[in-house]
Image (cartoon, rainbow, N blue to C red; front, side, top):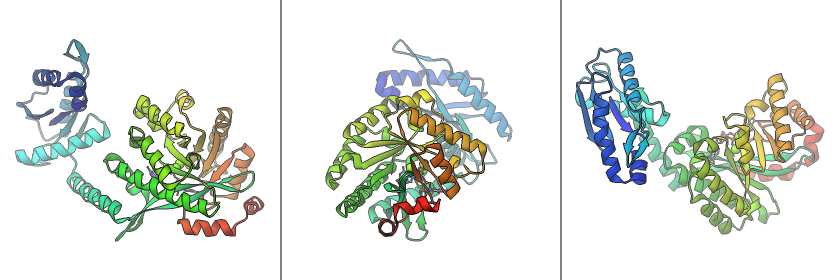
Length: 398
Ligand code: C2E
Ligand code: MG
Ligand code: MG
């Protein structure tokens, strides 16, 4: 088993390296007394420890031992007169199934430990194929870095229309990767990966830059469409985001209200204080904020009240089957009412049919986005579509 402390760096930063040293000194005896029956408890370096356990090939025993380790960390460590709680992630590899020598076991326990850290599960057992996965991730990271420098990242735009007038009032920028071999790759295949690495920062910067450049072009042609850009949680925990947004608005000469950032509820869960600060500073610039995928997160209504957003987007999973599913219809109706009572503009995403459009109009929903109006398309295609269509047409169609 390989054990790595979860917030050792933060603890060192906050309490000083001497406190960190004392924690490490206390760690050894704790691990030894944890009842795992380990033959060897060793510190490998930094905040990493390894335990060698003489167990059978059954991984259930190893998982029970990892649980014991977790319990051993339950009581606080006394540092600088403070009781400090410490958590750790444990990776498990079993001989001879995963490897039969020390080097192989350590490497696989290490891979499992990273999985436990990423999933915040406390412990994880190595599974075959994970090495290929971690190699794939290294390749993907290099690939995405190249994509950013070679200009393979581009945007499609999907219109949002006013349901009363049929007028298109804004667009959402949706990122695509024009991969030389794989063709157009959808964001589901690389945004989550980028979010787990530092790559989300250059990616978001590129998306903002491309979106505002297009916005400026449309403005020159007399098209004043509000430009919505999706922002990840990591971006909202980045204190540099407000300055970046301000600089890009200035570079492209787009007024702040012409930009809207779409955020998700998970931001409130991640680090409410820091995220609220970044959100407030972005809001002060005059940039709009929209709460995306509403209904899929876990935040409470009291969180919602505190979020400085002006718009709420009802998640497409509720909207898509609106016409056939009574429960979905009830949820959408409640969300529309909630938004209106909080003074928020409400958008339904995933509007695919005339029936859904009609039902949403009846519920008092203000804006709609979805295949019924148009799919996300390249900027040029959207310009042509806008020139051809009349606002009234969609109202007549429904
Ligand atoms: P989202 O922000 O909720 O975007 C809406 C997604 O719904 C888009 O998927 C869009 O193509 C899809 N959609 C729109 N209308 C309909 C419809 O009528 N029916 C159905 N079934 N789907 C519809 P897409 O482009 O694949 O994007 C998926 C998600 O990836 C986005 O969800 C967003 O969370 C994320 N994403 C996209 N672009 C970016 C970006 O630039 N940065 C970040 N951080 N995330 C992005
Ligand atoms: Mg969105
Ligand atoms: Mg959404």
